[in-house]
Length: 240
Ligand code: GLN
Image (cartoon, rainbow, N blue to C red):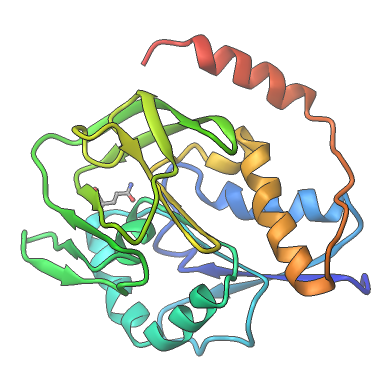
């Protein structure tokens, strides 16, 4: 086992894992291991206790029914997750889990489902689903490539900033032109795909934050990503 261990908490991999979202954890693991870090992934399932403070937290997307199911469990961990969020733990929350980190989202039956309230966002039921390939223009991470498929419409409060604008796609709600949200170390997004292998700058941002917090300021070895560069060039020119 490497001396430099990084721990990733993977929220609800059995329920919230649509459109390849589990690839995000694989990407974090590989990019850490290629740089000589050891990685422990702790899968959190409904009913499990929360572990010691992790270095990084991931949660993916899911169907409405799965989302309603895990909502009951996640609310029992609100204090712990809030504490980690407030102290700056890097977190990536995609789609369904992004929604559940907000004040409320909606249920399968259309009623309101309270969320964690960690992110100053609200999500309401919408009409047609927002589906398709997307590109988010982020000041910090450049073009973020992904795929969206959500019925909920998310609106940002003043306590968060958008992850970026959407030159291609519908984003948070199909109206205001924004995609995702950021607060402290949290990145929330609708981008599936999975998002991290397609966007290594975002993956390395999360990794950098995790290792800096764990080991002090750390220089990450650069990684060559030729296959990713090719895939990104192709994705940036494809139709929606
Ligand atoms: N069920 C939620 C919605 O449709 C989240 C979907 C997802 O995570 N892909 O808005």
